[in-house]
Image (cartoon, rainbow, N blue to C red):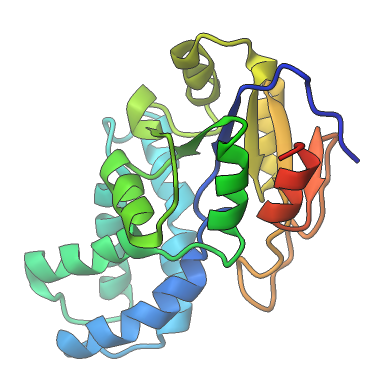
Length: 239
């Protein structure tokens, strides 16, 4: 199933869950940092709860309850909310930032770097993530992800699924909306991009939320291309 525009120029990627395994990375990295600061809890559920606050935190920015706030600051605040909720001691300002910067070290899924590298030979490859620019650049450095550029919610002061985020890329790159393809493992993100006239590529990540994942287990829209992995999607795009 592939219906890719012949004039496709740019592939932009959702990052958390699509390109990197946020859950596996956090579950692996949290215990050692917890030990360093003398904090002990069920780190698996902590990782899930931390990610669970991601959308509600951005919603506060979208609704104007908070001024424009970077994801790093929203992540840190969510971390501190969880400490309080679980009755855990605060590791101090420096420690809280060290925990928050674990998000800068999320590791790519095994097929991500190769698949994005294949696409890079034919298209401009860039992020379009709600993660802030420093987070995305540090993550790419850590994981060897070969981006041409990092677009972020921060770039446009709008978090996806605001149209301004998707259309901001179109404007920045001097292309037509259909010449930009959003690659994502999330049907909702793709639907929002499609509404803005962008092309869409779905990549399956059935383990993003762990063994009990309930959503995004298949392509649920009329997407231009669907891949079982990043490499499979790259091939569907003629790379």
